[in-house]
Image (cartoon, rainbow, N blue to C red; front, side, top):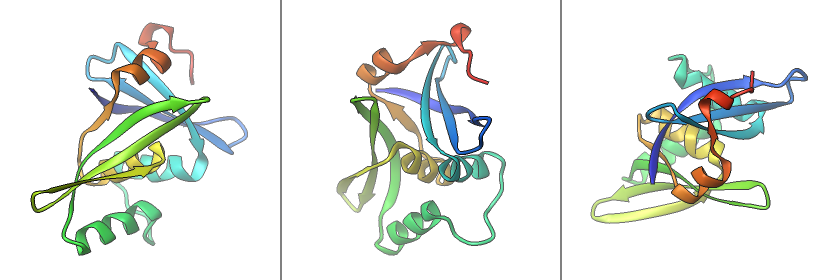
Length: 138
């Protein structure tokens, strides 16, 4: 696994879709993941140090996790199938490790709110990664 950070979040010109750019820690490779605008907002808010006036889905997920006595350990972007990214949240509760399947945008939004690391599997990086000097997403 390769640790990544959220490099950028941007909306397309129509404002209906967005892209989150994940970067490896050297910022030499970027992974663009297309998401909806609402999910982009959920990712952008903690990056800007802001909170929504009412809880977003990622806030609800964290509340449920904590009320069940678990902690967020990390988010993992696991694979790509037919152009769709798959991810999971890894939690711990006592000595138990729990892995929950979810959309990458949700995993990223939850991880950012808990300052938990985000990882990408090497095969995903190889398939979807682009060299940062080739970055043409604006």
